[in-house]
Image 1: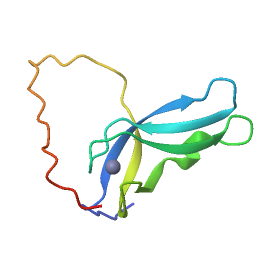
Image 2: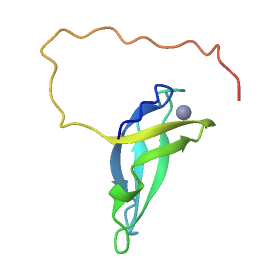
Image 3: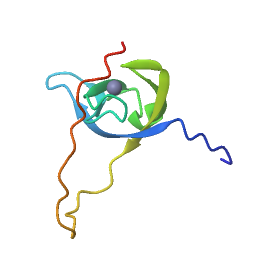
Image 4: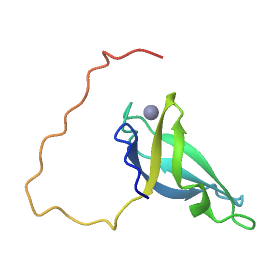
Length: 95
Ligand SMILES: [Zn+2]
């Protein structure tokens, strides 16, 4: 609990399932590193608690940089005005 590792970023996830199956997965809507969507298997509805697979996971785009799968807070509207989203240019093509 006392650990602080600033190099590990939180990644907000939402729980998804695959229609017709019992497979669930966590969807990282916006990776803190690459901005893309990543999916993490959360287990089987019958046998697994999906929250078990929350926490630190290697980022698929760069396994040397883990992130922490974190449940999204309840959706709420910002009272402040929207700030324009910055899009990173695709300068960082280090795969
Ligand atoms: Zn990524």
